[in-house]
Image 1 (tube, rainbow, N blue to C red):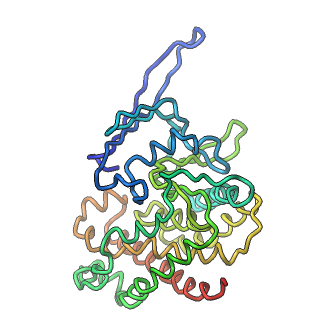
Image 2 (image 1 turned 180 degrees about the vertical axis):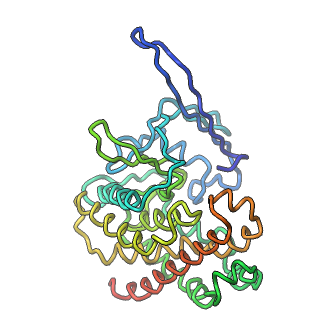
Amino acid sequence: MSPDTRALFRWSGRAEVDGVERDWSLILKAWRRDPKTDDASHWNYWKREFLAYTSGVLDELPGISAPRLFGASDQGDVVFAWLEEVGSDRDERWPADRYVTTALHLGRFNGAYVADRALPDAPFLTRTYLRGWTNWLPWSDAVRSRETWSHPLVAAAFPTPPVARLERLQTMATPLFDRLEALPQTFSHLDAWRANLIATRSPSGDERTVAVDWSFVGTAPVGQEVAILVGGSHIWLDAEPDELASVSPRAFGAYVEGLREAGWRGDERVVRFAYAASAPLYLALLPLWIARNVARREWLERKCGRPIDEVVRGWAILLDHALDLADEAYELVGRLD
């Protein structure tokens, strides 16, 4: 969260309920108007999450859930929401199986809106989130800069920098975005990676996934959600880099299973294209991340909870996988018509 425009507070105490003292807690989330993101169509519109909660579009979601809203206040340039505190497992590392289970839940969520559930159409929802995210910063400059690849740790992880493959991705970005945005769209969280997901259980013991931070919520092609789950969870090494090659296909398969459980009966090739194209476009900023952060050793090791050489090696694995998916997307796009 940006400390200038957003803040998060936890309130707790004890109260007597029916003669019994009980603990209670709430989350207070605050957003301050940001003139740079004051357009509802902006991918990072400052008020979007507040409006998502107060409009009711996050109530009774299929497949996953959002924290309950207990109260809200709109004071013009500052807005507040009182939210349920969901028991958090955010300090725990998920095993690979939990990412696969989450992909299944996200498939049920997305699938409901391309089966029989009405697609929300509120003006504050994102509609071209990934295009805005990928074009947010000049990542192509970092691709071509020798400084990006010259740090000894980076040079060891990338003996042959993938400059040509990244330049092809930049050339193909606009037609890929155009094709993605023409595909069937579904209601999507669009920031569903490990830091924004909580694994819980229902009263009957079934596994549940609660998603927080709905700042990018909107519509997106079926398949983009799981690309962000897999890619985003590997950026800061929440997920194990050495498991990426197995988690990626398993998560995609579970996601498709969730779609079908929700009633979707579409062409799996379309979903696969959305996954294969969205992952590299979402991760296109990774060379810029490398250029900006490798020198910040102490911060980076604290952020990822790993030695810096493991972080850079993980990024190399992730970028190579993303570019392999890009090659797959280039092949698939011509077969969709």
